[in-house]
Image 1 (cartoon, rainbow, N blue to C red):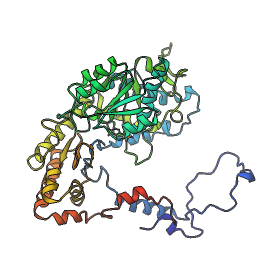
Image 2: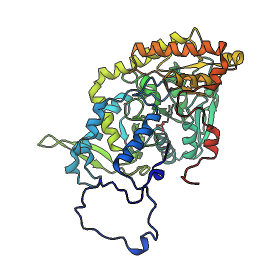
Image 3: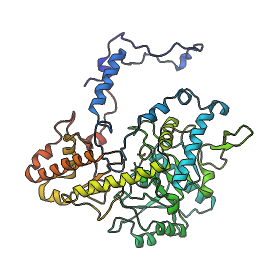
Length: 480
Ligand SMILES: *Cc1c(COP(=O)(O)O)cnc(C)c1O
């Protein structure tokens, strides 16, 4: 497929910008380029066809089943986009006077109220642009807390070995040292190891519950108690909130700081590096350290109005203004659309769908943990690989030829040939039945025709890219 720059034709133009309604002011000569910028010269239809062609090579939730575990690839309702396209939300400037953006402040204020109610937190910031960014923000809150208390010896963050890779990465970025705790045979945190690890050097714990094996840790109250008694704080990675939203709250489990991935639980687009949102909530003393301004509602004779207050003890901004505001508009639309009852059903159906699919697949492949799962489960293909030579990667690639996205591969790291399925609540029974049938077909093929699975996929625009090469020697510029 040709790149835009390769399609460029000298002199071809697209005029899409409206006439400027402000006086032009030429750039001072010292800032101007000496040579013109080499931009592709194209008509609007050239550009439009280019992006349509690109879009056809990608696979999204609107194309088919997308069980990418831990990522909660649910359907994003179209009404979210309608709300986010309203001119009152799109044609505003973050420096406008507060009286002129009351609706926007209300979006943030009401989002905060609802999300605090769902998580058991008291205040939130909407600045962080993703879950991982929220982790860093939350850890900086914990760091500030210990600084304010003179706890200079609390330098370690405890993280279970089933954790998402962003957890240790964020802890290190925030200046902490990471200590791993192993998982117990049931997939939960090993309590004896945790008790041994927690101590005077503990700054806090990072945990997602249910964890990446799809297991709700039944010791959760004890876990947060052990950390609190050691003088540490507890951070909740909210990436798996879809499993419990409306039914259980991290605050009630004893967590002090929470991040939420709006693109997972709250149906905003997974940006592929684009604009995202990872609100961070907290309570008690830590509230004062949140980044950004506090949104408040002041009652007056006419009902009330929204205002913003500085937080003098804030850790400082982690992003401009209010974060990716339009993402939050989409999330609030979803929250209001579903209401409390609807959200409770979301998690109930997410758990039901995961258990349904697990039950269909379990006779054909080992499941990493016994018993019921929450919103996702992990298949362990270790024995199948040993017997047939077909790996988790081969089965995942084979799924692409069946018109599905692959599950998450080789994660969590504690299961060696892992395939992690998260069907989400937005899939119907027919889709789950068809997906199970396809995967079972592939597992049987592993015995009869392993070679064909090593060769998969054969129907996609690209077969097996050199992933290591792409990561180690990325070509990020055209024409090199
Ligand atoms: C997705 C995910 C994250 C990181 O969130 P991003 O929004 O992708 O930055 C962290 N932890 C877990 C368990 C996740 O699944």
